[in-house]
Length: 388
Ligand SMILES: [Zn+2]
Image 1 (cartoon, helix red, strand yellow):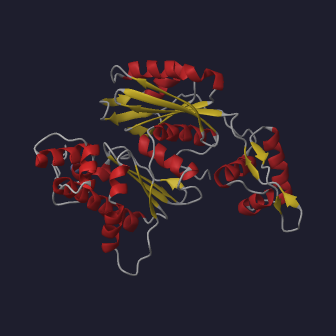
Image 2 (cartoon, rainbow, N blue to C red; image 1 turned 90 degrees about the horizontal axis):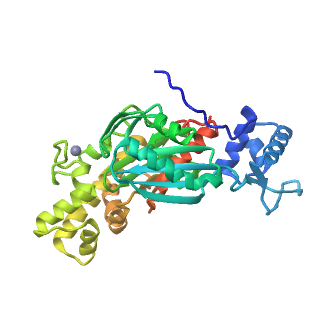
Image 3 (cartoon, rainbow, N blue to C red; image 1 turned 180 degrees about the vertical axis):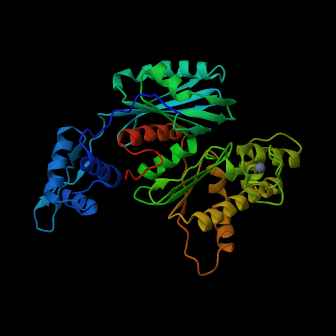
């Protein structure tokens, strides 16, 4: 398959070594020139010349805080220049799109939210292009778009059940409408990329992200790279068996993660047991009041989260596991029980897991999309997150 597409303007116009210096400071800075030289195994004089070029290009600058070097000569660590270069990230969801503009450090500098009258791809792209005109004065360099979908070549949506799309040439439609170099990725890849480069996984070579909400999501970084394959976007972890109870999921499984953990599963289980409709938030609230039905539903979900964490730790062996997503309040509420479930399933001599909760706002999915554009323009493919 030949793909004709706009290429993202490279942030680093200098070849090889300059890009490595830039990436090192972006991912691990602030760093002194000497630290950069040691980390990259480069000659210090070479690094000094490269950093001078990067400073002149407005990509790096020196921090205001001088550090005393080992020779006593003060050095001013290098950091990425805030602002200046801008990237757009768009999260597409049923009936709405959220767009942000980030600088090179993935700091959000502008955002907008638009409702969509329907989920037709052409309507979506038209409104997306109109929305992005709000950012014209920031002169964005590239665009990342993300959605719950199986995506081929960071470009074509193979299948996106949540909006009912199949074989949509989304990258081409968006580039034609916006004129911006565009990358399209699955939303868990984008969120995981952002966590790895700029979030709780910064500096780690392996990381797992588990999200709870309308669905169950999973992203993995191993050896500095996002792990992906043709099935990424199918929501496979949602169909892991985690319980002998629960509703029946749309694919006919009883007790899979989707049938126990999602907003709709929790609402359905509690509504059935209580005899009236109840929202996810109200189930959590009722459980804090000691309501037996709500507590049982919430505890089943907590045990399912614990089971998934234990499985991820055992099979993928990441340095850190992050639990996040719109439904993370469930994990916050039941964190002690979750950790007990995990430790009960691990041998007593096993190490303590590095597992943490991370509450995110809706806009962070869009920020993840912007990070995929940043990675692309840094010359790192999204699934080559270390940039090597
Ligand atoms: Zn299932």
